[in-house]
Amino acid sequence: MRSRRWRRPATGLMALAVAGVLAAALWGPGTGPRTASGPSGGPAAAAAAFAAPVILDADTHGAILLDRGRGELLGIRADGSVRWRDREMASRPYVSCLAQCPDAVGSGSAVETPATSVVWHLGDELRIDTGRSDLVLWAASPEEALVLAPRGDGGHLLELPGRRARAQPQPVDGTDPQLFTSADGNRALLTFRSPGTVYHPLERRDGTWTAAPAVQAASGSACLDRTGERALLMGDRTTSLAEAAAAQPRELTVPRGGFCALVGRQALIQRFTSDPERGTTTTTQVYSLDGPLRWERADPGFHPARWDPESGLIALATDTSLHLVDPHGTTVHTGPPVADVFLPASGCLLVLDPDLHAHTRRLTTPAEGPSPCGDWDRAPRAGG
Image 1 (cartoon, helix red, strand yellow):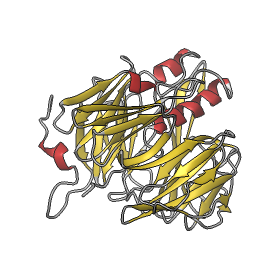
Image 2: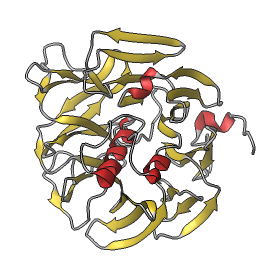
Image 3: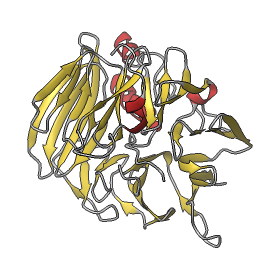
């Protein structure tokens, strides 16, 4: 059975998407190469913001790490051992785990020329499907993958895994596609940064994906709640809420940001800005869905937060420390600085140190049954 994985929105594309948001804020649109490693030039503050390693995807069995210093991806098991390393795959903007990490797929190209292969890490095997410029947005295996195939007129054909053989791929249009999945893995939204005026709701039942009719809404970016019943859509100038994934969204008074999370009737919005004097700043705000701002804070550095629905705690890394913040904005724990954080499962926080050592922290303590962190809890604890 496939373990539940609390992915970043758009999985491995998250590093690219947020890097693009910050690049636009710093230098304007279209500046610098759009790679998984982020912009290569610009102010020193931005260079520092993109120096730390990143967790691209993880579950209770392992993780994919981006070592930006060496320019390579690492597939690690939960015991800390490295199963694979791949420098070429680090340039792919679409990277995610398969049914179980660190099995992985990478697709797309970081340069203007189209990619001509899809890369798979399957156990200890490296498989390269050559002659393909498909974008693999989600996959449990090479045989069960959600794919955007290029269309002759510049658009795409959306191929859904598990569909009956006579079903035809669905034409979709736009550039910079992103897939945002719910935490339980049963719903997703496909958006396009350009034109950013329509999104495609997707649902998975019994291993079969289906696509609902496209919804007109400003939706260059998005986030879904735990089950995907609600979705927050962020356009160029507006933020809106869909009470059901395929419902017509209603505009909110919540400002847009570069990153969002949706838990219950609250939304977390983060904006990433920089100036020559103060460097890079992450502004974190939590709003009620009916509009009022509940709390906000500004911290140095570039640090997307992780909000665990099970405990209600928000994990927020800064340049100086790791904070666990409750839904009211009160810091309940402060620890040493870390490179990145991730939620591989409900109630479990995966912490990545600057030296690429990954370890977990339980956010909830089950009264009975296994740990929410799975195999990570059986891993050796280097350095305590």
